[in-house]
Image (cartoon, rainbow over all chains, first blue to last red; front, side):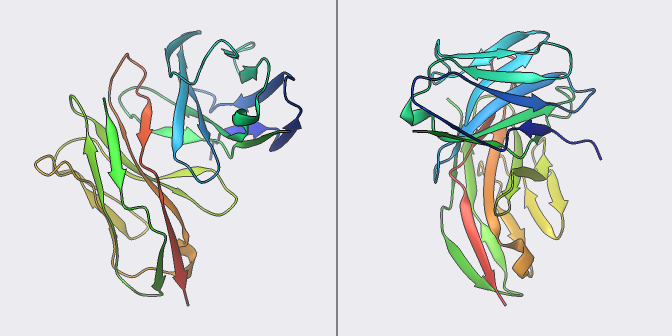
Length: 114
Length: 114
């Protein structure tokens, strides 16, 4: 069964460093998302991506964040200068089409900023 | 804006007990409604969905009915098992800015004891 994969599973970085979180969505899906979950809190939407551009972003997704689909298979989230409050679990999701409205999630990357 | 309110727990039940997790929503338009489950150490898995009023989603013995009149999507299972121990998230998606982003409730941790 096709699945969304994410690497790394755990990333530790120092404050101010850049990190790139990687995702491989399900191959024939068209819509891509990043969400985050701070420990013990709800899952929050960060950004959605369709047709090689951002379709919507939340207030959390400020200039420190960027997304890219560099090669037609990977979907990356970059945080340019990490802060302590960026420590969270980051989930990638993909959706085949707007008719199904079913998003499939990867296992997540736990980001720890020290 | 769109929002989801659900029972937060945590809740502890004995095996074979009846489970209800309440979920209500606020949304413009006609949202789709979802229950996601997060097993310990894993990502989010789609448990069931309903896309229009009076639809019933079901999977693995769990059921939820989309009630437009009460704006609710309560999750039920007649007889829980130890393997159902997880965090359960109610969510909605609505076409808003074209992205179909998911809006989650805070999640409810369920522990089932033998």
